Amino acid sequence: MPERPELTVQGWGPPTGRVATVAAREGTDDGVLELAPDVHLGRTLPAGARRHLSRELGWTPRSTPPVPLAEVQLPPSRLDPAARVHLVALLGAEHVADDRTTRLAHAGGRSYLDLVRRRAGDASDAPDAVVFPADTAQVAALLRSCSQLGVVVVPYGGGTSGVGGLPGTDVDDRAVVAVDLRRMADVHAVDVPSSLVTVGPGLRGPDLETALAAQGLTLGHTPRSWEFATLGGCAATRSAGQSATGPGRFTDLVAGLTLATPTGVLTLGTTPGTTAGPDLLGLALGSEGTLGVITELRLRVRPAPRRTVHEGWSFRTWAAGLAALQRLARHDLLPDVVRLGDPDDTRATLLQGRGPGARLLRARSRTRRQGGGCLLVVGWAGLPTIVQARRSAAASVLRDGGATRLGRRPGQAWLRSRTAAPYLRDRLMDAGLLVAELDTAATWTQLPAVYDAARRSLVGSLSTSGRRPLVLTSVSSAWATGAALALTVLADRDDDLPLQQWLTAKRAATDAVLAAGGTLTHHSGIGADHRPWLTGVAGAPGVDVLRAVKAQLDPARICNPGVLLPD
Image 1 (cartoon, rainbow, N blue to C red):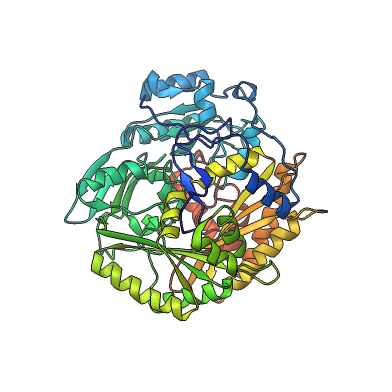
Image 2: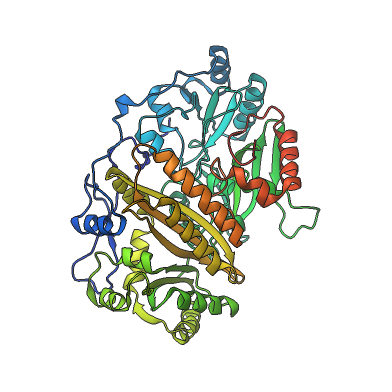
């Protein structure tokens, strides 16, 4: 079986492998937290971060490590021996596994709720077996057989879902098989004249970029889970990515795909420029494994940029930063990367920063009541002359909006740190903190109200006597009509009722965001966490359409039944 590096944020123990640690580099002049790669995280937080969080949150630091692997409770496999024999006949004995280690490695995703359960030793969402098909034909045969056998199938790529996308649950308590796609991780073809690449769904972003670099090409999709997320998973969840303001949103990069279902194989979106009826490709994108398994992707690529520039700017207030981004959007001058931190987010970024850049932003920081400085990171990629022209035009708008340029060091620091949050989250959870995330999007007109509603709801839900959450908010991408917000929530964890603590806050915040005009999610998908709100967002007729499609392609309801569609 092909080896794959283990994801280091599973919550079963201390992180290992490539880990980034948050620290300020001595002598830098940007003042932005930088990351030292290839360092194993310690079990305690830096003293400065500990003091800051204790002061902000009313948090009592304590050691709350995950239970040892040996103490994790794993239910017995429900897979019928006869069904296992059938799966072995289809795939080979070496590609069907139901041992403890393999099942635990495929238990759930990376949401806060997933991690809380696993850290407490609860592996009730682990699959009953894991299978490793090699191609579309094997996946199609597997789905047909599981439909006949009454075995639930959950596709598994990188295991990075942040919304309960891999619940491993079924209302009828049927056996669950995880379909690990690591054997389907090849680059099948590169069509340079057409700017297309055909790949397997189990391929990871870094591996694709390495293969494309030899041809002078790039895909340019970089979600925060880039190190581990697979391309099939990005398609199934409509991944946004950190360059979504530019050409990096995954749905814009998919030219076509192959979807294996229990009733047949669909090849979607193969011909460019067609007007032959509705585009069925959109049904597969974002389907989260509920219709079948994506077995091949045809992706749009572009020439690798000859120049890439990332830099930082400072605004005195959040409102000024939003107004400047809106002007950039109106004049079609948005960079490829946009990240505007609010005052709380910026203060957290600068907590251990040094140098003139940090001093400038700190000088602009005010108390929570007065507002504070906001850090904007922007980035461009492409031909040198085009990058320079876009950068100069954007700089003029930003200066007119009251921004001060901080130079390239903040941008470079962001590049080094952009995939580090999951590692830091583990560290914070070890110390007794709730660390969870929300994401949404809204029009420019509604964005301030959505921002206020989300923060107000979270603070109200998580505040107790002497304790208050810290809500770090940023604009993570923008476009002509609006922008996306990413919120990271830190609070003193309720060790007695940790799940209920976040569920209560999440429900209140989601209701508040929707009431203010925001979307249910911008880049996380629906999963199990958001499915209760889907009917309100898509409408009852819309959900009925999705159910009808599922009934046609998956009549036995074996395809990831625990996500997307409400019960």
